[in-house]
Length: 250
Image (cartoon, rainbow, N blue to C red):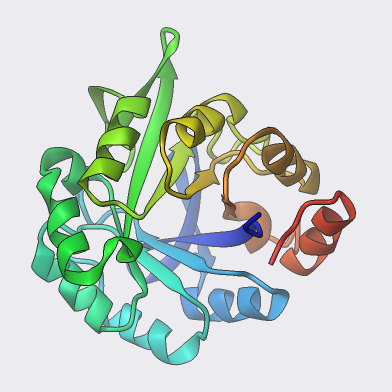
């Protein structure tokens, strides 16, 4: 059995780490490189950086930040936000990112997933899905959670895999920032629907939430932001706790 991964997520806005609740009420947290270095010391397996306004503001993710991160951190990292074409992904990957995360652009132009996967390999392509539970069904949202679609989350996850995605990053908008636990039902439904790794995001508030996620779903990784940023839970305490719960972590 593959060991579970713990992944901090840093939302980036204007070069700084920020955090909100249910994609709103955005507050500044600090320098992304310094935060990343702390997470590495604590034992993070990977780090995800998402430029949360790149798509809305119609600009590229800051290449300079990626180059700085590549110099300063020594674990795999994913970068996302504003990637609209193959060349955007090429710049990020050649600047030092290990993976790119596609969200809105992949929904609008699904063949972008295939284009990047063919050039750089599926392992370099993460499809991020922002999902919201409405009227008994989970739907995909784009543009940083601002734009609803009529696409069902399970259907899109399956399609993303078929197009060449190597991983799914699934964020429940209903749970995001609430610290009430992960959305176990949709996380497990997506895990059952695809054969690629799924990273669960949205809702982590305490160590027990990670235990419940890994015990009740087959997800391969858990992602969190604010509880790590504000040291409500430290990764170097979380991992031993999970091991004591007979959960294999890296």
